[in-house]
Length: 239
Image (cartoon, rainbow, N blue to C red; front, side):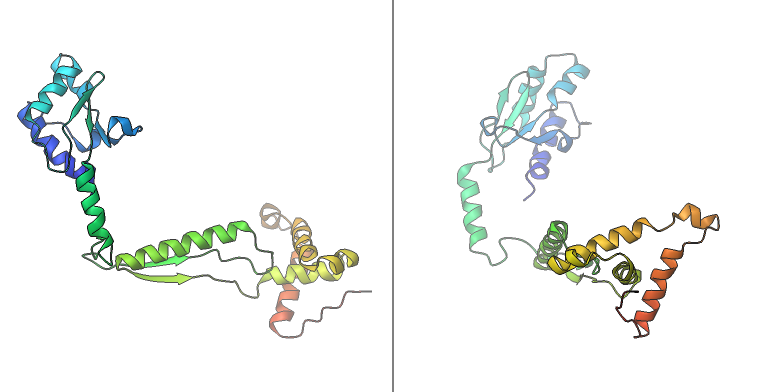
């Protein structure tokens, strides 16, 4: 149950009977920041008081007078200048929780219209080390997929790991021309990641390329990629 929507229907009826038919009750119902003020609060009395030129509390009292209390709520409390504190009955809430616990779907209804969702996970660059950001987006994607499937929707998931693109040509070029042998022996993945970054720094900017500046490093990386696709790449550094 959407409590704000449910409660708003009763409040709008009370507002109408009290002479405030034009008020959008739903927009004035907010979750209470402190449980001692109830579960929800209706904050519309202040604005209505300005129009009616009476105190907000009098407006609140008039609303409560015409408020047909639904079974799910405790008696309404008027707080401060005119806030209406709305509190859900613990007995009703406990009963609903028991009903949900006994239901395999926890009371969640199937969607009227099944939709198809496509969720793309972290899709890491396979030429660079993974990091915690990849883990985070993968967990979020999987959580969304599980939730949507539970709701009854069709979910297509994808974690694209890339292909043999220029990123490998960049690493091969760096390996052949800029490798730190000692660092590679100690931490090969870290050294390859460093090479990737260092080679990328040598690329000309898009603005320079647009002006006709030749980019020998980027062209060399593309050549390495082309050789790899043809199956003739040899990982031998020039002497």
